[in-house]
Length: 100
Image (cartoon, rainbow, N blue to C red; front, side, top):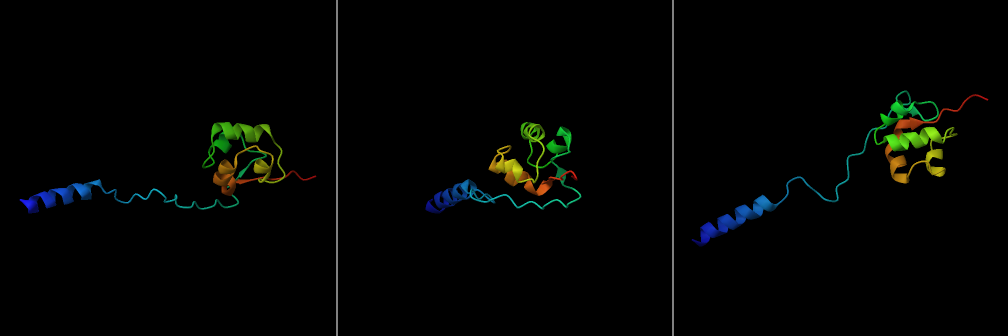
């Protein structure tokens, strides 16, 4: 009888253990887009900006509204996007400057 209770307890304990889940695990890093694939924050349409991974329509609207930018870091330096949003999109955007 003790063996059966032990096996039942062990089976319940095994079923309660999460498999493959680690609460402190971080998402796998993304691969940066090539220069040709990056979206120009000075010239892209709202629809093009929204396609950037990690971008929302709200953030894309702010980027359009506060143009022009000398560098993509202006998005963070001027408070256009939060540091979290900048971290998500920085590898997918570029700021081309007009020739003066």
